[in-house]
Amino acid sequence: MAKLGTIAFGGPAVHVAMLRDETVARRRWLSDAEFLDLFGVVSVLPGPSSTQLAIALSRRRAGWPGLVLGGACFIAPAMAIVLGLAWAYTRYGATPTGGGVGYGVEPVVVAIVAVALWPLARAALTRRWLVVVGARAIPR
Image (cartoon, rainbow, N blue to C red; front, top):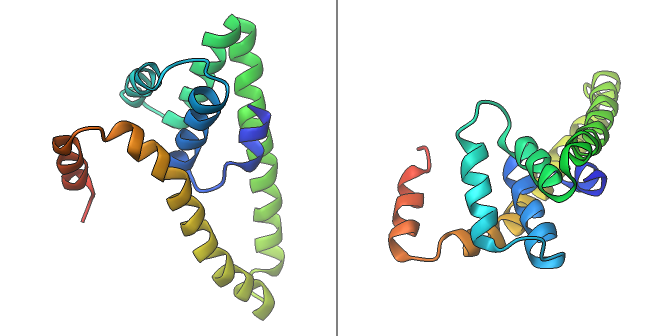
């Protein structure tokens, strides 16, 4: 989880896609159906579903100690990175160079999100009617 907490930029959708890749495709800890069921369960709970999913997967893999350690390893690296970026933005964000970096990072983040979501969408949208429902759910 520390790896995902460190490299999973792009928000909850990217976290979920990377969690799926790590637990279903690479390690084969569970099937696509089991992953999507677990994601459905945590999605109805209040709070960040990607964090809850990481914690639930950690508990499923290693019990209660896994829950605590997996949650800490998922949250702590991202928190440290965001604190560092927030400090850098408050220090350098108003400078011309800082503003230019912000404009350059934006399309990279969009590309990272698109690449990460593609495999998740292919796994979840297995029937045509699911694609239609998903498309209608996109806010306009």
